[in-house]
Image 1: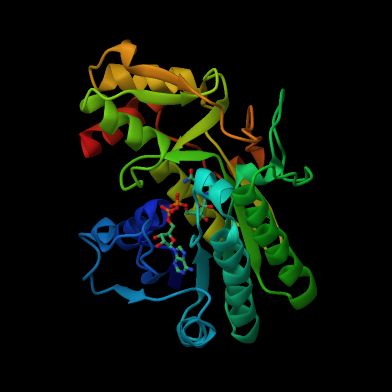
Image 2 (image 1 turned 90 degrees about the vertical axis):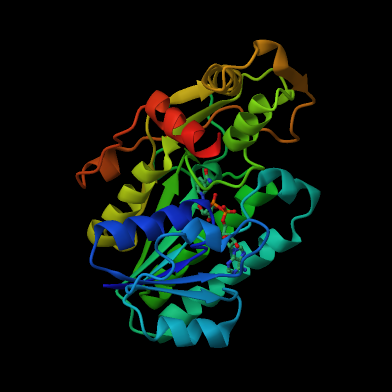
Length: 306
Ligand code: NAD
């Protein structure tokens, strides 16, 4: 299979490109605009591989996208503005890339003859949940601008399946961690600051709960959905590993051998969702399950950053 991976120089996208090149016979075309969040360094080791081609460009560039889509069997769309805090400061690039960019890719896919369009969505599209878990049938109820644009893209992708028969499959994963994540995100930021004995700013009371999945487990899940997923369906991807942010912070301090005194509670993020949790029985029925514990994942992540 020949796969177009958009946003493949970012965190999860680059791990997915490594996964495809190293573990399958697929050919991969990476399309990435190399924003502040993307780097060719993330593709070191696969960049010049005979089954890999890197194209610097924008998913909103219809002409370029048409050329690339004409020559692939599948699209996996990771490209996005991905940082919630930045979306609170200004939502424009989020609407532009996450919604309009996805629309451009869907239009190109509709005009070409592709077998699969995987839209990488997020658990944040469901909003927060106090108890229990979200299933794929739950209503989307995003509560910050980033999540709202991802929900827009998710719904747009579903509509292209319903109205145009574009073979869309959606993944909604929980928080990823692992190598190649931009240092603005919680785990790499805290690992780095802890190693430099700088304070770790924890939002609010630190009791917000996130479900953490190691990035290679998510990549294996996306690969499963790419090959086995039913078109028109969405699949939650999670690990069941739920941790309060304060607990993640403590474990990072342990991993970096740093003092708990570095914890500093700061004003909460506006619209901060209290808890996310996913029912993952649907993807497990395809034969996938997560492999890494939080401890193993954090050790690998710390080895990469420190
Ligand atoms: P990231 O910010 O690390 O990477 C995004 C990549 O997209 C970057 O390489 C950037 O250069 C590229 N990009 C941005 N705008 C572009 C454009 N207009 N055209 C082409 N390329 C563009 O993000 P990530 O954390 O790897 O997330 C990847 C995807 O997974 C996103 O769609 C995100 O919403 C989703 N997701 C992330 C998480 C997580 O925990 N990180 C969880 C669930 C879902």
